[in-house]
Length: 383
Ligand SMILES: CC(=O)N[C@@H](CCC[C@H](N)C(=O)O)C(=O)O
Image (tube, rainbow, N blue to C red; front, side, top):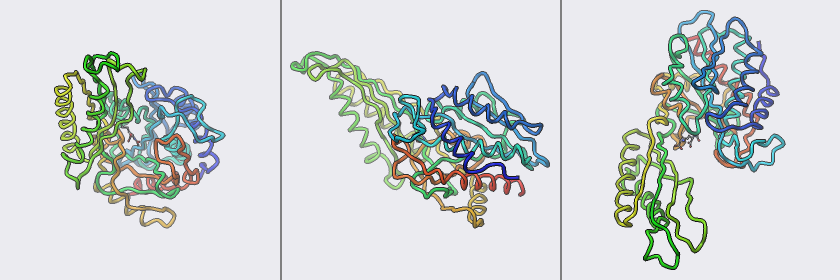
């Protein structure tokens, strides 16, 4: 029985787009999702929330003839970005926006929960609404809290991410590593400020931070095998308040990325070495924090990815393209290190990139995205 249509998916997506919330603070989102899920509850379903990760929700469907448990994961958090789309359902939360399409991901996951509440699956199915993908590693937190133990442990895990570069509704993945592993970089440059007219009497953190940021750009160009590649990007820089005052401190943040854990380790080592060298050269203190280990490379399980690709390519009603690896990060990578599975892109056709304040996804992706995921899950359960 088909109970999910475009209008329903669009309504979920727009409702959720109005109320974006940051990592681990997704309380309104959680309440919205829970209310919908509870409205479909029946004897085949169990709904689980946990006090240690209060915005997470797990839904488990008992299979009719289970030989395994399939997992499906959506992220639920938003970004600290002030929306500039001008849409009638623009964010009502100042400075926050679903600029990475998690509203789309949640809409599809709600569609799946609604559908399987009316069509009991053959295998068991666990749908995981995960907080904190953009920051704070909700996937790892959930795993480390033991959310996926006993009957809640999927044997295989699937998830999607929207992709503005692909036509709306096109699915895409590859047999291999889809997304990079990332490390979050935080740097504090501590100098000794003073009057800008007397630079010889200060320890200038602005000059040191500038040198450091430019030197970091040599990590990829001089230390990483060009065939393998990597990314060092700075997204935050703060320091100073007046044009004629040299401040005491400068603070900046960025992200370091590689398709392999070995590559990421190398880049992190070079960043620490460069920071130590620039600190010495400027007679200044530089504190570097590099956190990795949660946003691991998103490595699709080879056997499962081949099956997904074969299935998608065999279906006339699914538009599918084999993907190229991307430097995007995802903490689904952490879950895929624990549980085999596959992440896919879903095309949402926009000229604006992910993380743009003008991202305006093409909602015609919603129904084909839902249908493809539902068909994939049902096909997998039949094999
Ligand atoms: C799909 C996407 O855009 N994911 C984020 C994941 C954030 C990773 C982490 N917070 C970091 O900044 O390294 C991304 O930025 O790729």
